[in-house]
Amino acid sequence: MLSVIVPTYNERDNAAALLQRTLDAFGQIPEPAELLIVDDDSPDGTAAAMEAEATARRAGDRVRVITRTTDKGLAKAVSAGFAAASGDVVAVMDADLSHPPELLPELLAAVRKGADVAIASRYVSGGGTEGWPLKRRIISRGACWMARPLTPIRDSTSGFFALRKEVLEGMEFVPRGYKIGLELFARLPQARVTEVPFVFRDRTHGVSKLGSAVILAYLVQLATLYRNRFPRLVGYLQFGLIGLLGMAVDSAMFALGYWYIGLKTLGPTLGGFFAQTLSFVIAARFNFALNRLWTFRERRRHARMSVFLAVSMIGFVLRSLLFEFIVSLPPPTNGGWWAALVHAVTIEQIALVLGVVTA
Ligand code: GDD
Image 1 (tube, protein in one colour):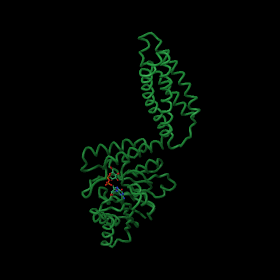
Image 2 (cartoon, helix red, strand yellow; image 1 turned 135 degrees about the vertical axis):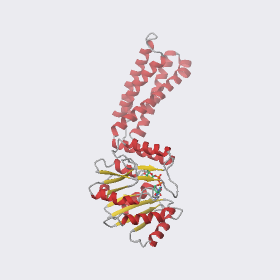
Image 3 (cartoon, rainbow, N blue to C red; image 1 turned 180 degrees about the vertical axis):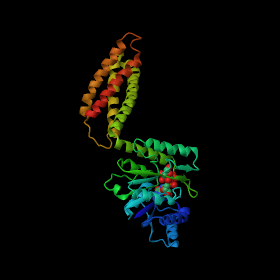
Image 4 (spheres, helix red, strand yellow; image 1 turned 45 degrees about the vertical axis):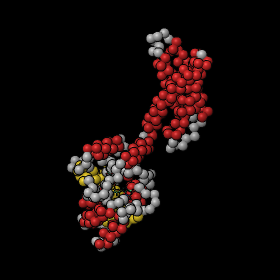
């Protein structure tokens, strides 16, 4: 049996055509099928309109309307649909008919032929988009391209797909963001996937909810999926980025501590030592705090500050010695004061990273 989940928010004007075309498509399917409208209590009365259209077509047995009033959101609505679906195959489709219901028989047939997931794809031969401005085409292509290391699927941001419900079992699936398809596909690297071409035709009624908040949510979702899939690589990138930021903090603190405090109050030698110490302590705290908050956020590691400081002290000593050595070289060999500082803080940041890893 096929269950078609359609999340809706303010889609009243699409109700009649959606129900008619979907029920017509059911007529082409050689097994029972149901339509699940999952509405987030739309203020325009979508739920009532869908129910009225179903009754008018005497399709109350094939159409169910679920109204959600709490914990709203597209991904959560689809997830609620998965939980309520009776079919062993579930499909997800938009309400605005940009996803043609006529493709449902083909998607179902692909699953029945052995695919775990059948995706209606704009980006395989025969697929495409119609009526999209250049900006949206670029955003859509860019979004798929950014997800390529996570999945070989060409149209990984498609919201129109069918899957064998059993692939969801035991899966660590988090209903977040807008791209529920990607959330699933990225977590199913072993799944047998078929992409069925289709042309996305922009909605004629209502408005798309795609905006900067949706784009931002997508980027956050992507970052999380990358962290889950490539934890080591992403960890190294985070260390590197924090190291670079740490270098900036360190250099700025050193310059401030030396020129504005140390040199004026303690003279060049003691003032230099004061600035080295001040910038080390601040940069070390910065590096430690940021790595705990960000790099180890999900692992909830309880790093030991004492171990971190002990390892970092080696960096501090190396940094001070290197700095003194470089500035003591005759110019132009020493490359100037800033060159000495950059070399010194680089060594120190490497030690800080080692400190975080061992702590
Ligand atoms: N229940 C519920 N709650 N449904 C929602 C919500 C929500 O908060 N937000 C949006 N929807 C429903 C809409 O009513 C529509 O049926 C579907 O989700 C998609 O929303 P649109 O606003 O039409 O999406 P879009 O046009 O920006 O995005 C389309 O293109 C993407 C690919 O670029 C959709 O087709 C996506 O599914 C697709 O991934």
